[in-house]
Image (cartoon, rainbow, N blue to C red; front, top):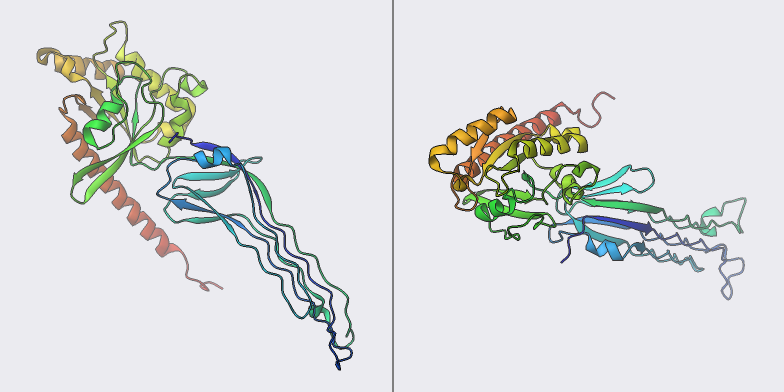
Length: 358
């Protein structure tokens, strides 16, 4: 299935049915009075997050979603039937925004989450509601209200704990194959990864995390060069970024330090918040270095790059160094999740209970 992470749709909720102006007419019952029923409610359009869906491809080709109108009211106290709601199933991680204003309508961040996209119109009132002691034969009724209509932009941001950054051929796909069951394409040419891929890394029986591999970045990505700029949004939800660097490129004219700086620069130009995310440096392809010169080359790179954060040297091809990195990531994520849970608990305790302070 083709990976689609953007789409534009129109949603049209149903109009409410009109109320009825009717009077009871039966044999031997003169002046039976008003009996016009209300109109039915128009159908609403809802969105629900579904873990079993991982792309917006359905909404690339089906752009207009229209709910039915409610039925009109009828005589004999018959109320019009309300129309059924339409439910649009979307991947977890979908952000829904108004196309014109950019205002976020819903952020489907958890499985089963439901969001109202367009509310159906209420049904009109029949003349049954207008009778009174002074108005025994009301002919008033109201029309149903129109349903809401919106043009919406859908944007999928994949949910992963760890995001992989790096130039094309930095070894990101090889790394995700080494530590998880994911099998992205691997080849000896750039841009073999054309769409984000997710892998579940199982550290122990009940300890795991999700890692996301996006297409490699090149200099100028923030302005649209290459493929990776289209998928940088998928790193927004990651708790930590791994910056993979090819320490021993085949082309001797390629400078790993310059390429690493270019990646950092693209992050900053694309989104300052993304640039400030926790980021670890992962020096890859150490299997291509002689053991006698390996540490010297790594130290030289770190010094020239000016890196002061965590550093891990690995070979994604042979698996060397991958296991210690995976365990370190797991421990870091557990600490972050524990801190987030404590923060949420403290925030909930600070919220006043309903009715407090009134």
